[in-house]
Image 1 (spheres, rainbow, N blue to C red):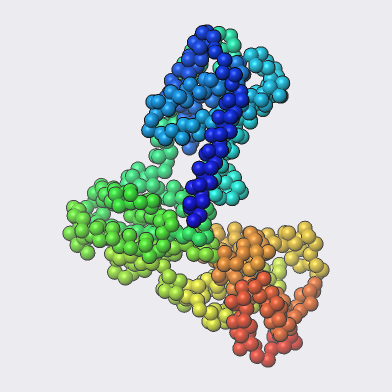
Image 2: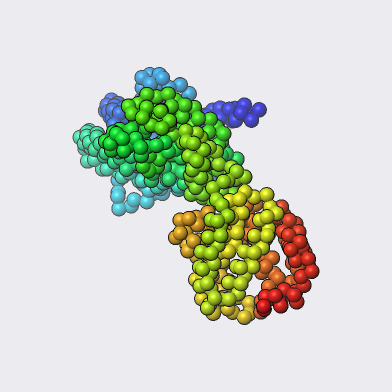
Length: 617
């Protein structure tokens, strides 16, 4: 029903524009017989429009085209008025209808109507603002600017509203997309160029009509050739910058750029997946056959992926060495895995020189797939998951595709956890001379996280990240001035803004160590609130990574139950009530009661007095 209504709305809009355009043409036309010399000029202008239609100016980087017809129409408007201009428009469009029959007749009528509306309105703005037809005075440029601005705005509104009916996004989304793609800037450049060309043609024709028009046509043709060559050169250089010279695939930098774009602009209702592929036993092949033959093998692999993905929207790339990546927009991990399994079998069946000498006696690759899920911190986290799945695929004997599942994360172990806890505890020592409270707070939150992680249904890897993240979640406070962090009274607004920056400073500190990248969401986002009123980004609900939501509960509980000069300390029962009161607002309610149960189980008789005494010990 919605599609039918949308189609009818589109037809009504086209009909309405056509009626307004025809009425506008009729209202501004006297239908009087034109003198012979005017007919000569009229057909000369029509011929120029048709001729220049084949010599457009292509503007980099997006390849938007700048047609000369608008410049000619506007020059006619300034020199001869609206009636003569609309007659030029009528004849040129009639010729296009005859010779461009591949386009539906209603599209020609729709196009004619839009031009009629734009030219009529631009003419009245020009005359109302003080412009005089035939009297060109560039010292008073305002009428020209206002006229073209009207022409520009009407063009945008009339055309975009047609597409808006087909796919109605919000106005804000349209504007954001325009800014992101630099389309708004390119449109402004395009229309300013049209104004300048229209003024150039006006001056040339004012001096000598036919010779001026000839010079303008010559200038336009030369500009068309020059800009086309420049654009082709630009696209060639862009292609070289984005492509891997050996395999012909996109390179690592371009892949990361497209992945980041997909992550930032994707709709929460949609998904996408990413896969990392690694050629099995490539080093052995390289050692046995030499580096030149190894390069040929990589080139063969690149062409293989190009052939398999060329009819799909998937984006293959060389990620580095013998490792490749594929971005799957709008595709689930199951679909991506099925696709990779199919092409893996095709790869196994492909004959290639030296393949028989490999351990598996055939060409093979291993692959890991990860899918975007709500709460994914950034694209790097997604790649890390795909990399872990790839590692597991290798560990399972190679020549297979593995999908990343949190609950099946087998890539970490307890020895790793113990070692990393020791490393991070050494980093925490920097707080001792400056802020003993943050040091003790971090240790308590760490112990709570260890206890709570045992109760939650988390994978081993998630438990480890929660524990390690809890230990260094406030590491950014080392950057806060001593007089603020040790202030006895309540912080003023300026000091509070500085205090809130500790999450961003912490992110910067932790991000310098690559192996701790997965801890970044806990460090940066543990002060986000479930209702979206937290900081630093105001994330809401499940858009906050799960572990950050869990850490928020733990961190807040310890802050409430710790002795501080500027706020009353709550007993455990009082803190429990506060957690429950803020459940669903500050905290994710799924983790409030389980955390309270853990505290009750581990500290059944602990009072405020007991806690203070234990802390003193």
